[in-house]
Image (cartoon, rainbow, N blue to C red):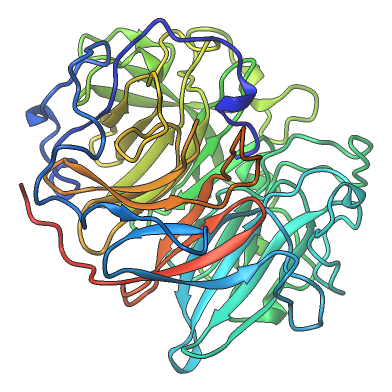
Length: 482
């Protein structure tokens, strides 16, 4: 994401600490009314990772190379490093790694599509995405995606799309492609751009020719996109918006009648194809919920309706501003999403003065069959979110093949990857030790792009600044219910 807690003023009046995670990731969608509740305002909440004997992989061990602290038995490998590793034509790897997904490649390789969250003109960045011929949308823009092919003893990297802006979380598709999302609303003539931005583009990691002449999927709307998932059964696309003034929205796109998803099919859509809608929630008593921060207990379940977007391309008014109070539900910093357990996990990274209630992070689960949204993870506002036991600002997430969730942190203080078991307990997986600040005022870049390899043996994760992709391996094991 481009805006973090460090950019937002205001202190919290809430003094809750720690993480409250309800229930089993595998069971959450089927038993929303049985979840344990935890009060965000409680000062007795357990630390995120501390005090849970037998859960997780043990304490994090400092890295002598100063990059990634991991539990005993785990190791990492640097896959790409901005300004050090190079693309096939010889240019340096672009910077500011963000959303990533892994796909099975030829002859046992893993193909990863890696977003580069670079906003505005190319002159603003030392390592923008190179303008590879035939793969450029707007030659003035600095962002895009690279495709990384990882084999046992070698790595290759090339451009998947260039000339896009602020490529943030994105999402994979059931047919093996990547949807890269622009987290911007810049129009042609703004910030040096020569075309309108704020769209979703499709990138095929396995077919370079399919990426030629990139075109935005305008049917999915033009706004500050963050992440997207596809419902493989119903064909809906769900999309998050990371914006404020007013807070952003969760969207659903319904394809037109007779449309069939698949490789290259988005290119066949008319700009106004299908129906784009924003969500509207109500509580168990039927009362309208104006903002997701109103939920202060895990296990909270809202009913969801969908309201048509008047102008998805936002020709005159930003999409989120096309609704009056009472028409839609809002949420601060809607970030990463991941499809799993028959629905979409959705992150609201944190809430501050622009929200009714303050918190340090939420993870929700949308059940499309029941049309319900259930609060699964709630992080109370921390006094000192710097230790391995205190997490804040969840961002990218993935569903682990070993059970539970893996969450990338972008908050204050230290930056962590943490896991959540199927029984609802949490544990540290990694800590960023690369100080990009000073000795007196240390600063650590956020984790992004957390994703497992197709065979589940490797966890890929990025450190956004300066831009490093890492492969973590070790004694992964299925989490026991505890």
